[in-house]
Amino acid sequence: MYCRLRLVIFWCIVLPGCLTYIDVFTDASLIQHVDVGVLRNDPPPAAANFEDCSELYPLLYWTNTVHDGVYPIKPRSSTDHFDVFCDMTTDGGGWTVIQKRFSGRLNFDRYWADYNKGFGNVEGEHWLGLDKIHNLTAQNSYELYVELGDFEGNFAHARYDTFNIGDESTDYTLHIGGYSGDAGDSLEHYHNGMKFSARDADRDNDVGTYHCAQFHSGGWWYNACAASSLNGPYYQPGEYHGSDTGYGMWWYAWKHEHFYTLKTTKMMVRPRNYNRNL
Image 1 (cartoon, rainbow, N blue to C red):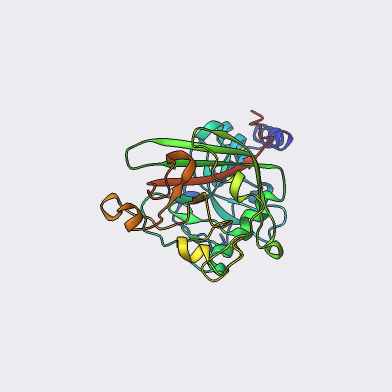
Image 2: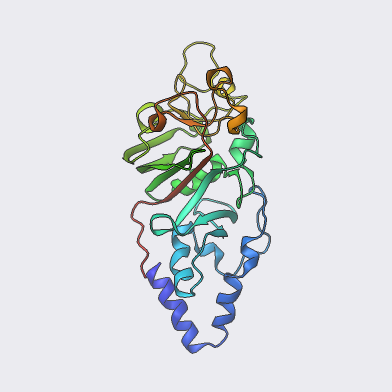
């Protein structure tokens, strides 16, 4: 990435048209409203060179345009570009967001096909898609950052220095480890090695007929059943009445409680060896 950036800067010195190239690449059209499943038909020049948001950071820095927003990327094993939301401000930036919730307007109780391809809008609530997440995390050693927020204005995070998922032939099996943070671990200890389940795909570790994805109303890497479920139902405070309502969107290790519901969640990935190379 450092060499690529050096070449771009040198081109700016010798070719006047280089400034036009950078302006096109960082144009505001990159952050317009776009569905997760819709591929950009006209990706900006050199978009194929960027495999995730971490590779974009140096270019944004040197053009004084560092900000969160939607950009096209193309992981090595992907057949085409797709848009992602890049968090360029949290803990050094360079994060590719794979899940985000904050309003409850998007239904996450969906079938396998939806979780596979992704749903929602990348600049709003969305699930990026299991196939895209696999392609992202298969090309390097990735870490995961989970950000949680409650209705009282408190925030916490869980960070894992190992995160990847298998391909569809493994039912997108979760591989995760190396927890740190202040939210507590509700993913590594109980969900590592689990397959992904959705409303019509019962692949949890329950030996009986219990269907965890249906019971928790959201797709996740269920064991038998869960220590977290960030794709569960979204409830506003006035709608939620603990166990009388049922499971919401929760992370047990933070609140030490199954029956509460979170206000915001964000899951994002970045190469473990991330370096801004500025």
